[in-house]
Structures are given as structure tokens and as C-alpha cells.
Image (tube, rainbow, N blue to C red; front, top):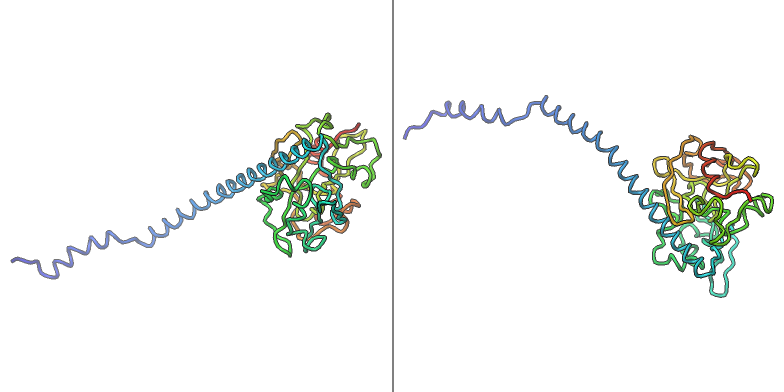
Length: 299
């Protein structure tokens, strides 16, 4: 048997093993390509996540609107009560709070204590019987900021001119100046497709179930209002709205003062127009006018 000498075998095998190895430069090039691909893909994934959360927000608001419409059908067209100030709670004979949602949210435990995390303040109401099977609809999927007591159960509020007289009687607007929507037939102007009912509220601003706005004088409507409460900007500087005709949309904000950073603590005065850390008291020209046009209208 003829065998090549050992030296010859080593010389023959050496080129094969060298060809299978990476050089340092080749390895660095591969790593650089992976890094570039990751840099290209991560923003796309982030945008896809934001779109998914936006779709979830729209779905939740549509479900709430369906419950809101069913309530009015069952109560002869009367809209669910939206009086604001959820800290003063009184239950009826069935143990239900006469609000669309009860309780006052903050960054601690809420008022009464536990309102931040206790679903009873959402479901122990006449409206809650329509949403009891899916209590997650009260919260935007993009709201992941927990209070000190844990994740809050709600991030959506209701237009203060829908379902109550709080905006006129408590906030000081002249009686008989603005349209108040108390029945399902009230949405004549601006119209049901142009009157928002539900909105994502800023985490620093949210408290009771009512979203308030300081409207401009009726003679200058629809000029921009300043914020009593502040809308959220979860969805890449956009906000979820649900309208009286049952549709929901995510609206993109234009003005920088609308896109208020989250500070993690509440404003000093929720209803006096005092500018706090969450933008209360500021005026947002384009965004404020867009929202005013869709909040109510002069009589």
C-alpha cells in the first residue's frame, strides 16, 4: 500500500482548512451588515407596533361607542350621565354609581383610595353593565404608564358637553350659549360624525371621566380653546377619538404644545385653567381649533 508521507498529507489538508476560516476583516464586515440591517428594521418594527396600538385604540373606542349607543336605546334616547367630579360617589338602590365611570384617577391610588386599579368604579355603574365582559376597552393599549398603585384601569374620557351640564354650570360658560348633548337626537350641529364623544386623555391630566375645554367666546368659534384637560399623544404624536356616529379615528397633532411630555404628577388645579406640568392653560392653535370644531357648537 502506497501512502503519502505525513508531511505531504499536512500540505494537502492545509489549504482546505484555511479556505473554511473567516478572516477578521470578513467577520467585521458581516457584523457591520447585520448592524445596518438592524438599524433599518427597528424603526419599521416600532412603526408597526404603533400602528397596531392605534388599531387597538380604535377598536376599544368603537366598542365603548357601541355600548354608549345601546345604553341610549334602552333608556329612550337619553345619554349616559357624564357629570364629572367622580370623587363624590352616591349609589342607587341597586348599588350603582350614577356616572358613565366613577372615581378619580391620579398618580397615587386614586380617589376614593383604590380608584386607579379597582374595576368596580368602571363596572358598578348603569353603563358598566354593557361593558362588563370586556373591561379592557376603557384603556388605550399604548398607555403603559403605571401609577404608584399599579396600572390604571382607564385612559379614556368623555366630552364634557355630552351627557351632562357640567361644562356650562361648573366651568362658568353662559347658560344657553353652547349645545349640550343629552339625547341621541341632540347631535344636529356639528353632526354626529363630527362630534367626538370619547378621547384618549394625557396621563398627567386624567382624573374624572369628563374631558373639559375652555371654549372661546361663541362669536369667535371655532377659534382655538385653551386646555382644561389635555389630550394624549400616544400614537406617534397622535390621539384616539370616538365620534357620536360610532366611528373612531387616530388624529395626528400638528402643534408642538399639544404633544406634552409625561411628567408623572398631576397639575395643581384641574379646573381653574392653571398651567401645570401637563399643558393645562396653553392654547394649541391648529389642534385646538380642530378639536373645538368637533366638541360642540354655539346655539
